[in-house]
Length: 265
Image 1 (spheres, rainbow, N blue to C red):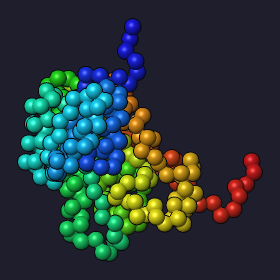
Image 2: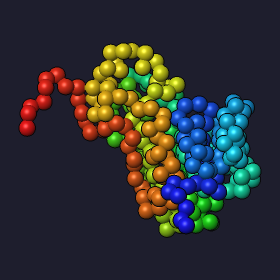
Image 3: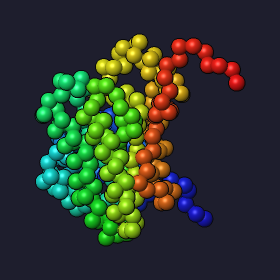
């Protein structure tokens, strides 16, 4: 009898940026699908509680310190995960940051912080994990982008540049490593409430405006990302690579707030 779809039993997934937010949701979804979980934060002690939660599901875990802005930290973290877990089958490149400012107020340091974390960190973490995947002829790399991979928003110039870069990087790495059995895809959430943007959701008028622009008429909920991340991590996505999967309620269709009723067909 064949295995059930989306079964990750026996796989090891490494999710970066797992101390809070979507990183924990990604890790939880992969663990529920059967994967053992390696997690990271700049301060690994912050992962103690979440690690116990994942272990309660019957999964092996490890927690490592990782600062994706530091090349030596990336190499050390990947080596430690491989030492403790034996290998890395799935990488979820989730660690990221944002600084919201009008373009005229963005500083040199702001730009470097965002691009070094979201783009350079994503590349060099993938680069550190890939040799083991290539040697085994199997790997799933999931780079986390956002709807800003394909759309521009005021106040998000460096962030949009970093996420657009992740989309392009994903396609390049997919071409580089596909021959070795390694798929590389970008999972791009739309507007989800996280610790980074929670202040926006305190503004009722802004939330109403946002929902008007989303065809499904609501912001994303964390559970909306569980199926997509498990799919991209699983054998069922074996012929999918170099793609950006937008999970955005349809906002990337370019919908705008309606001021009048649409004409009848």
